[in-house]
Length: 302
Image (cartoon, rainbow, N blue to C red):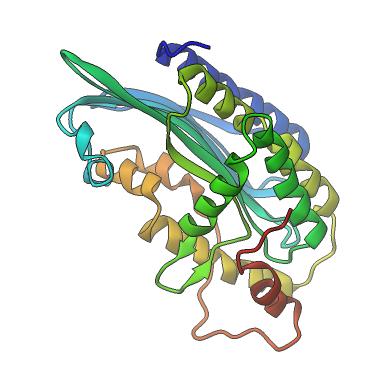
């Protein structure tokens, strides 16, 4: 394997990943995505693919971007002071699917590459990404399937990766102000440079293509489940946690806003409808309470 850095093959892969993912989701939903290409004044651009009020997904957003700049925002330099005063390029695909049916979980996936350059010095680069699940009325078998599929994917590279990335995910998607998990986790990693460039790129490609194995079987199994206003109301309430996390904690959202990114594309991850209820408490023994007691506490699912 080689350590030669080739950002163009990453860029081509990410653009292709977006197109293939859109095609797959259109088959599931039966409705076509709106394709919106855009340019960024400071450098670069991207394509936002969005589906709203579909047959399965209330909102589905898949964004591809490749943007450049000469000064990094605070969200990046706080964690990486070594990249300050370097030219940079960030590229990635980010996906969030918000289903209509409360028995179908929300899913988020992201794969990305970052490189910072300075004349006379070696490039600084890394990969990042992950995929995580946010159910409202979870089924244990679905959660196990999701985690087992991710473990199988990562074990092909290194059996140490899944437990490490799972722990990262549990820690990252914790709403600190509530001390509450956003969902049942998955995998999350950043600053990934293990072995060499080619190894890291192959790992990213495996995660990028994992949606069809990890998530879509759950969608097919649960999308026609009957539900009432009670389940819909709880789904909207739990979506508030999604909004809180993205606006208060998510590094990708903060990076996009601070780097003068395209706001419509950055905030496509938001659910279209959401509600807050003052001091809401689940009824004892209810399905809603079981989400908190049986699923939102970090545990080893596989």
